[in-house]
Length: 124
Image (cartoon, rainbow, N blue to C red; front, side, top):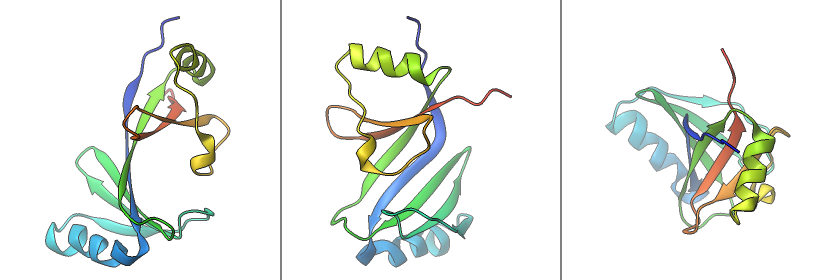
């Protein structure tokens, strides 16, 4: 099975509610990056801001029940089913209970706990 993983453009930083406003201000007022609040309907993320970061997008996610920040990364694959089978064969289980997502995506973690959003690559 030839599964090819590529980095996606999205980076999510999960931020405790107590540090959220200061973090948004840091990106907007100190770094002077383009920051825009976006509507969100998610049971675990109460607010989100999109930050243009070169060719990437950083999502600043306000998470009410976190005590420290976490950075989550995006991976894309040509076929989600084949990639999932490959990962399971290597001992990497999905952890989709972390946060609600679309059916054609999965959450996985590396051994140190870094979270990756695994999703099928959109062909242009």
